[in-house]
Length: 340
Image 1 (spheres, helix red, strand yellow):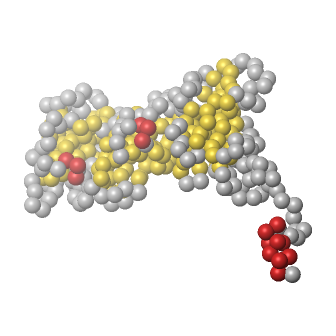
Image 2: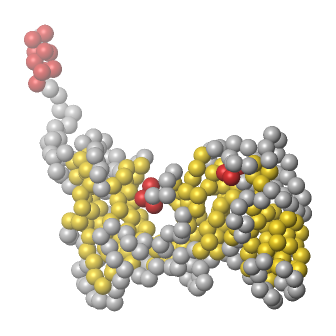
Image 3: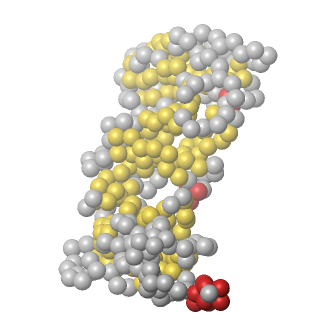
């Protein structure tokens, strides 16, 4: 009897289930891939499957296949919405052509060009090269991109870094703006940190650390066939969230005179440092640009580069001498028309 029991353990006696062949399981689907389009690339994102098609745990995921087909905008292509051509493979362990962030794969297709419609599908495969079902097809029309936001600039307050920008001259079709941030001005290293609606031209980044430098760009966004299409990036804006924050200048006053527009303000006291000031000018509601060539120690500045009949606004900031990264938020004046 003992010998019989031992042999049953070794041979697997019993009639619970039929053993499943080792090659039967294939990875489950990746779900519906999401797409974002840019003038020079398309970014696809999809979820990493956790189970096989039969419901068992997926333990041997090896990678993904990206299929693509395309045609010119306006041309007929009856079978393009069923992409069969292998466009790229993404290795799950060492994804040199994609990123894996949490439970998501982010693949960038930089072999695109405006004026084309692209169709994508994605599948997963395991270590035995068994491939799961393809995802549903995602259609991306890379049409004319929206115009680029202008005049991106940064400042800060106690809540975080504040970005402001001017809308494009022809903002028709823009649905939103997306903000990207990085630790360097390299666009490839920047990641999205938020978005605003089309009528909002400012954004507060509250997830920042003190005494750290950040770089930002803003892109305008419109929709094309349910897929977001973003503009080229704005110019890069550099920002620092300082360790300490000083009071901004108060009571910024302006006066039109024969020799220009005079701006004056009340002093800002900074402990154990000389205070320096910058003066900014905006014409007809456009971007504020700094107009003093060197930091100011006095409490007034005359802007002689103005034209008769034009309307201007001015803003003043303060900072400790030699520490321009600690510049305060700007205090703005009322509008003034130059009428000498």
